Each structure stands twice: as structure tokens, then as C-alpha cells.
Amino acid sequence: MMKIIDKIKNHAHENDSGAEKASQEQATKAVAAPAPVAEKKHKEGPKMHPDLLELYTVTDNVLGVGTFATVKEIILKSNGKSYALKIILKKTLQGKASMLETEISVLSKVRHPNCVSLLELFETEDAVYLVTDLAEGGELFDQLLKKGFYGEGDAARLVHQMLLGVEYLHNAGIVHRDLKPENLLFADKTENSRLMITDFGLSKVLTGGNDVLMTACGTPGYVAPEVLEQIGHGKPVDMWSVGVIAYTLLCGYTPFWGEDQASLFENIISGDYEYEEEYWGHISGLAKSFINSLLVRPAEKRPTASQALNHPWFRAMLEQDMVTPVSPSESVNLLPGMRKNFNARSTFKKAIRAVGLMKKMSPTSPDTFGSGEIPHKEAAVPKGKHGRPTSTLSFSDVVDATVLKAKGLNLAATAEGDE
Image (cartoon, rainbow, N blue to C red):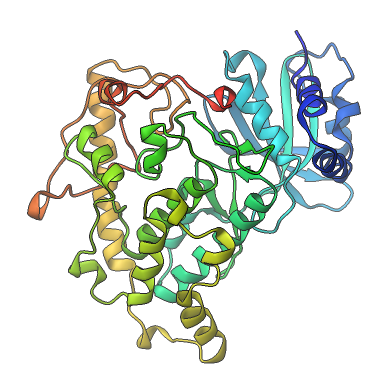
């Protein structure tokens, strides 16, 4: 079987243009030339790559465990700096190797403060080891909810940083396709930590100016309508997701919901959302204007990342904060409302899981299209006032395969199927 890294090298050789190839070679040098390391063969089986152990100390600090990988903290012996080591056992991929190949290919090209980068790559017969930046601050919302104060200006700063990362990716011809709060990490635990985009498993590198992608992928609640309709998509899908995340950063719930999966996707396709007075009465009109500019269709009407960075909302919030910082007493604390909505979301997630266990659903990843089998049953949605769910579907969506099939979606599709 051809090794994963060799396949990536061959694919790049066959498809990259001259300029793109030069850029990739430069990026490869920047990650300490991982390819020669990958070509070595060892008989250690599941043991760590010896070159990795020579350079790094692998700690017992497990940062995360997923279906396909375990992430540990490692320390570079030469300077004592910590990094993240993603360990992927090949036997667990089971036909999903293309997602890993895509992630490695994209990560090797990325060099930006607001994006997690691949630093080194090692491979044995049984495993692949990715050394990446260590985002010690944790997931976006997990850290926000620990703060004592969080206002609209804070939300604007975070969205601005996210857009800087998206702008870089788009200028490099990369569409992320799975932007969501879980894929936004803080670089460290300081008060104003830098935000970083991660998880490029569903990303796609465009090879031409007008590439149209067709694969249905992404996360329900954050996915753009053109993806659901399978009419072709590109960079604007990321801008839609930015709009959804910006909305959520200001109130704690996502703009699109439904009493069942059919109505959820119908609302996304129709762009049916609102600003409830209870949570939005104190939010500026400029913030709503920014969100409205992104949650629009057709996709061509959405601003590019560069254009969105120039929206008046950022000038009003960020420039004001630099000149005359807004104190908590002068701004509205958004945390009480956000905590209320997140507590409801947590309760809903537990209900979803309980139904899944009772019906013996497959314990795969229902939150992302193309990441495994999708459960066929729905859980009842607890309702609040006006019939709105007391939590939103986007954080723990259990996608109804029958609804999606009726819309012509291929749930088994992954990034490999794009044309």
C-alpha cells in the first residue's frame, strides 16, 4: 500500500501549477522537510517514530481523544517549547484516509498567526504523527463562558481575528468548509489570546479561479444553503459560516433552528432567521448589518473576507476600543444570556445522546457531513416560548438521513469526491 505521505507528494506533483508547486515546496522546507523522514521504514510497529523521540519529549498530557486520533502535548528538547502531537493509527481510518491526506496537504501550506500550522510530519508503517502548534487556550466558547465580562467589542475582536485567518486561507486558494466554534481555538490562556482556525479535514485547495465544489460536507447549523442544495459552492460557504458564528458570539445560539431536521434545513435554505429582542435589543445595528451581509444568498452577494474586514462594525468597535477602551460599566455584558442558552444546549445534547443509546445508534460522528454513518432517527426538541427550541440544533445535530436523501444529498461523500 502506498504510504500516505507519498500519495500526497504524487498528487501534488500531478495537479499543482508552477506557482502553486513553488509555494508548496517553500512550505515543505518550512516544516523541516518532513517527506524524507516519512520515507524511512521501521519495524517498531505502533511504537513512536525514533526521529520524533530524538527531537521531542512526549508527555502524558492527553489533549484530546477522537475516533481516528489521540492528541498529546510534546516538548521540543532544544528549547522547551510545547507543541501538539496528533497520533493517527492507520487501522482506524477505514476508508477515511483521504481526509487525513487533505488535512496534511492543507496544513503544510498554511503559515498564519490565526491558523494552526503543521510543523513536522513523521510516519511509520502503522501510524502518522503530526506535530502542530499547540493552542493551549482551548475551544472558543468553553473559554468565553469562564470570563467575568464579555461584550460586543470582544465579539467583534474575535470575529475580526477569524476573518484574518479566513482571508489568508482564501488568498491561498483554500476553502475550509467546516468553520464552527469547535474549530476555533485560543493560542494561550491570556485574557486577549489570539484565535486560531484548526481542523482542515474537509478543506479543499482550489486549483483554478472558478472552481466549483459539489460534495455535501460541513456541520449542520453552520453549513451554507448552496451546500444543502448541491448547486455548487466555493469560498462563500466560509463567509456564511462566519456570519453564523458571529451571530452565535453575540447571543449564545445559532440563527437557524427547526422542530425537526426538515424545518432546520428549510430555514437555512430560505435564510429564515431573526433577532429576538431579549438577546439583541442592546446589540448595535452595525453588528446586525455585518451578519446580514453574510447570511445572504445567492452566494455571490456575500462579501469576500477582505471586504468583510472593512465593515464599519469593526471600525466602530475596534478603533473605539483602541482610543477609548470601553469599561464593563459602559457596555452590556453578554455572558448571562449566553450561559442561559448554552445550558439549554447542553441539556439538549444529553437528550440526543440518550435517545441515540436507546435506539442503539451507531456511535459515529453525526455532527459533520462525510465523517461517518448518520443516524436515521430524531430526538424530540424541547420548546421554549413562541415554539422556539430551548436549545439549538447546530451544536449536536443528529442528522436525519431520510430528510437529506429527499434533498438529494450524499451523506457518505467526503472531500475526496469534489470535482
